[in-house]
Structures are given as structure tokens and as C-alpha cells.
Image (cartoon, rainbow, N blue to C red; front, side, top):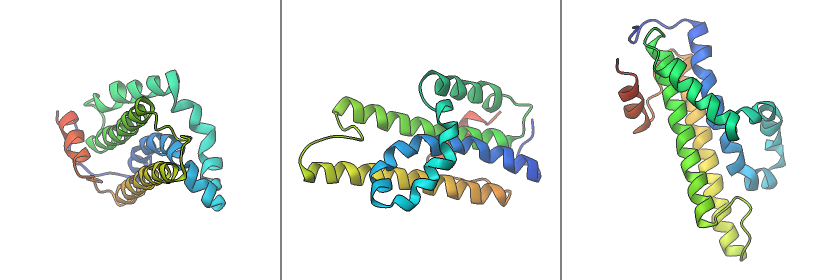
Length: 163
């Protein structure tokens, strides 16, 4: 087991890749933001080829493969395992929020009065921007070779990667 050892550039690049999963999933929450700011469409164009890996059955397979083959593998560096787990936690949070919105009928394309649509749009945009902030912060810290300790999520990630 490697615990908080030295990280080389390859480790940093590999540790940053799992954060693509929540980034891809968060795109669905940013639809109203993309309509207001078409300049941001380039984000969708960059990430869209990876989208089939993040949703449905393939997304579930990727999630469990990352968890079982990376997070639970004590032979890998803790830095990689921690960042993978933290990215999976962000992804799980987005999945729970999406499920909750579906159950409550608050879909991304909810129809209703303009006031209700504004509220849904604001909530979705906040979730999207929050996810972007977490991912950018994580990438910044990873490329410095530091642990991106997102409050609450980092504690859970440490708990799953403590051995």
C-alpha cells in the first residue's frame, strides 16, 4: 500500500481522469446555462464523445469498475484511489439529485409558469456550476500533487481508502 507518497506527473494525470465522470453527468444540469451563453457549447463538444460511458448501463459498469478495480485495490497509490473515490462520490451525488428531481417531477425540461421554470433553471445551473467548481479545484490540486480535500466528500473518500 502506498500512503501519501510522492506523485509523479503520470500519477497526477491518471488521478485527474475520474473527475471526467461527474463533469459529463453535470452537463445535463447546465442546459439552461448553455441556452443563455452559447459560447459555452464548446464544453459539450469536447465532452460529448465520452457521454455514452457515463449514462445508463455503461455508466453503472464504469462506476463499479472504478470502485472495484481502483478504489478497493490497495496495490495502487493512495493518491489515485482517493481521487477516484472522491470523483465517484461527486458522481453519486449528481445521480441522487437527478433521481430526486425525476421523482418530484423537477426534470431539466420542466414546464410550468415562468417563475417555476426560473427556479428550476437556477437550481440546475447552481448544481452545474458547483460541479464545475469541484472538478476545477480537484484538477488544480492534483496537478500540484496535493490532495483536493472537498469538505464532507474527502472524509468519505478517506474512509473508503484507509487500508
